[in-house]
Picture 1 (cartoon, rainbow, N blue to C red):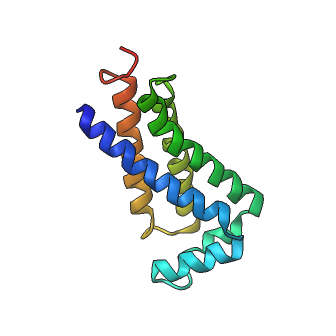
Picture 2 (cartoon, rainbow, N blue to C red):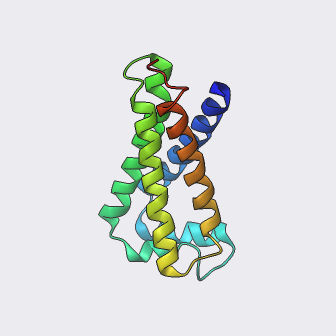
Picture 3 (cartoon, rainbow, N blue to C red):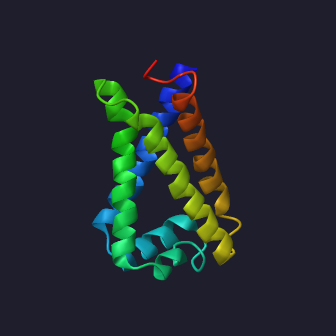
Amino acid sequence: MSVALWIVAILLAVVFLVSGTIKLCMSKEKLGALLRRLGGRAEETGAWTRDFSPAFLKTIAILELLGAVGLILPAALGIAPILVPLAALGGVLLFAGAVVMRLRRGERATIVIDLLYLALAAFVASGRFGSWSFTR
């Protein structure tokens, strides 16, 4: 089980790292254009970026980058490993916000990936808070 938790945590860290880096390094307009190109549906995909300010998008990016670091480094270095399940819990909150945003926008087709990531983050949080905690 510990190996599964590590694999999922690494996967989530990569997702957070890529997503946070893209959001941090691109302007709001370029981000929306990139998401439209990657998504296939020209109108729907990436349109959510228009609903948020550039500062809010940068805040999400910083939270994602902190989540990437928090999922791996504390346990790998043995320094404050309680941060791992807290970072996973933060991921749950971020993805829950993404699900709510997509429901409000009526983007039911694109909600599946957010629900998958939410479930993976919840798996890591429950496993690392529970019987597979680093602090035991």
